[in-house]
Length: 516
Image (cartoon, rainbow, N blue to C red; front, side):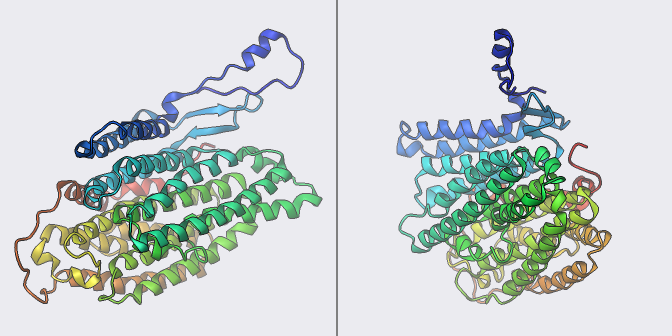
């Protein structure tokens, strides 16, 4: 473990002062963040010199960089490293590679790797600028990987914006597409507003506590002077707004459907998994680590948000018409809002029964990440021949592409929580149990009702895959690009393995992911 020392506050010998200025960095601990950022710079510079016909090489360099970044998590698996710590308080570090950070970094980097595989073909077909696209994707992935390891409010906000700002540009990357431009603008304006509110909240918290490090904030909020209590409470509430926006929780969800429809499909999948992981990670860190003293404020608020989010998301998904343009993407968008409600349940439960409940959100996020990216991968494949992205375009998919149809059916059953998608069933049971164990029986009932509602649209789409097509396919079926096939295969294998051995994920739901 290495540390960044603080400047001395009292008179000291020149030698001691010089020693205090020496900063050491644990480069292995920060490798999962530094590596994609470094590859992003390499790609950006290389784009200036690589001829147009060789631009696909930039994509493969990006894929290799994300794969290498994911591999750097292996030597960190002990989860006992930290860096950028205060000399006066070694327990207050700005970057901590504990088990929570490593699991979320794996989700982020592996999800970005699948997105990159899907993007190799999309960038070429849509004639998007390769250098800018890969630079933005890698930069966003670096910010998303930084956030779970951040342990002070300043680093959290910086990581949130590094992950978000490139995403705005990625959503609007399809030049000349009105929907893409409108989606990017709506995403940008709503996100900037939420961030501004969060920054105001952080300033209030700092004014009340005099610190930005999460552990110090938690200690000082336990004994806030009476005249600062209202300021601290307002800061806690406002800080949560930005992270609630990223999770697509109601009422901060309005940007989701239009953004997913306007974005390139790989980026829509990226936002649905990595973007959501960023929001939930920040929400977990500020609630259970920094603000446990105000659990009576954020606990009931998150419980209500969870109920509203899952209910509105599932109700909107049910209303999607199969013959409407972009209905498949819109259904996945509203489904992701509903799934966000389930992910909020254990965080709300942590306010009543401790931070150990957070493992249920992590386990559910790992399941959701694999199957939702897989669903978007199949959607990207179908969109190659049916660019209108209607649910009705999937009718008879099994007769045309049996492997893709079986994979999508499995993904949808996992999201619904039905066998053979056992990992989805077990993940939902884990989240349900966290609500019951925390005394949130009413929230467990709401969740059970919403699970039943979601069965309707997931099963309706699944059944459509195996129905006879309305008209026989004309011409020769185009061969699926192998990067897209690889992305579908990887996510399908992960989903099948997790359904056969759910303990690989569910073990995170038992015990604490944070050091005591």
